[in-house]
Amino acid sequence: MPMILPMATVLEWSIVFFKDSHISQWNQKQAKDMVGQNGGLSGTTSVTVTLTDVNDNPPRFPRRSYQYNVPESLPVASVVARIKAADADIGVNAEMEYKIVDGDGLGIFKISADKDTQEGIITIQKELDFEAKTSYTLRIEAANRDADPRFLSLGPFSDTTTVKIIVEDVDEPPVFSSPLYPMEVSEATQVGHIIGTVAAHDPDSSNSPVRYSIDRNTDLERYFNIDANSGVITTAKSLDRETNAVHNITVLAMESQNPSQVGRGYVAITILDINDNAPEFAMDYETTVCENAQPGQVIQKISAVDKDEPSNGHQFYFSLTTDMTNNHNFSLKDNKDNTASILTRRNGFRRQEQSVYYLPIFIVDSGSPSLSSTNTLTIRVCDCDADGIAQTCNAEAYVLPAGLSTGALIAILACVLTLLVLILLIVTMRRRKKEPLIFDEERDIRENIVRYDDEGGGEEDTEAFDMAALRNLNAIRDSKTRRDVTPEIQFLSRPTFKNIPDNVIFREFIWERLKEADVDPGAPPYDSLQTYAFEGNGSVAESLSSLDSISSNSDQNYDYLSDWGPRFKRLAEMYGNGQESLYS
Image 1: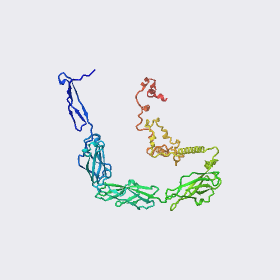
Image 2: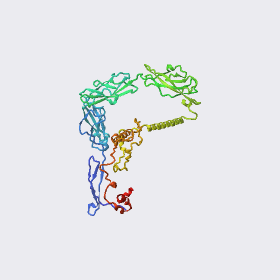
Image 3: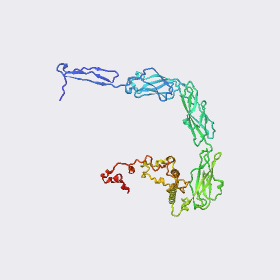
Image 4: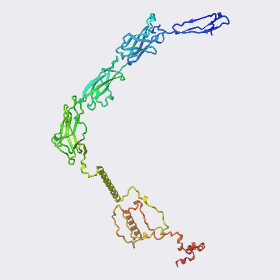
């Protein structure tokens, strides 16, 4: 469909420019047809124009000079200051490059650009020393990284400023004249010998005196001493190169005015070797010789070692001791290469005759003065196979019965030993049973006495006590003897106590019982003696028992007991009127 344009169009535009801005905007306007009359059509629109930046602004420092104070103890690579040049451009047009173009700190400081903030970062390249130089002046230039040639006519696209760095004094620890002091001393040096000297000074302007000491964590055995004022190092103990060939010690230097300031110096003391160790076998040799060995056969090759380390290397000389030179069993050959060979001198060896040979070997080193030692080589005679490999080296194998191994023999011996121990134990136990019984003095045997509190019914009551035992003193009693002692008094005969007064009879009876108790192992102790006394035939008070009423003249009639039944018949006969019939 064809488009119909209006007959007349009115356009009104308004343009606003923003200098150095990347955005400019057209004001919104309206377009009408029919010359703006009523009934005409209209339309509105807005136009946005984007402007790109160009590097048309040079960098400029806000200040012509800067000043910073830094301590002299600031470590290397530390940041001293940050400076920045202003640039109205943006993006890559505002990127900066900084450099030191002049000044007295060219080798001490350097400057670099921070890509994120476009700042110039000044750092230290070398240690600062207030005593050597107190301040530095730097002339620093800032320039755009990419300049636009179209705008060079606007002026130089760089700027400079001056940075002054003031070094502040700091109390520093003493400094040694050398970072490492190498020293040498012989291991034969006497105690108190001077090894060397270290030196340190206070780098501050006060130049405080310095005192020296050894860090004992690096000299635990206290082999060395140092003079606190002069720094002279001496030996404090005997040295041994074979124990420790090099001693690395740390020397501390402290300011006298401020002991907290401590400097450290390092000393390496090398111990020089002397020939103070004799040579010895390089290992424990296990040498064997076959029973069928031939004369001149090499059975062992030996070598030696020495803890010393001579400058020209070791040289050892081997030989047999003088008392073994003419032996008929073995010989020695020095190979001149720090080794020696042991050879047989006769044909055949027998284990029955001698199973082990001891060969003393004399070894001398090449030190000055030379040292020597005698080492003994043990040679065992063995039964070898056809290839000369040892099979059995025990001489006891000849005396063992055929078919009986060593393990079986050990088992038999163990059984015999066990049997002997059992027999010895049984014999010991039997001997203990036969030993006499010895009562412990601390044991109170009264605890085994049984007490009966039965007093009986009186002297005429013979049910509880047998009075005949008191009256018949002639009765034969078996004497009881103690098993642990032999009684000295034997009662072979007993006297007859007939026709002797009663008091004498009972006194003798009690005395006899006391003698028997002395030799009776079951008798109570002396403080629990048994007392025997005879009170006589009767009592003055007479008997109070109702059973004795048969002899009394009681008038009481007990005939009524017959009426109680057959169980009371006996009582009726005893106490009734017919009691005379009991004795008829």
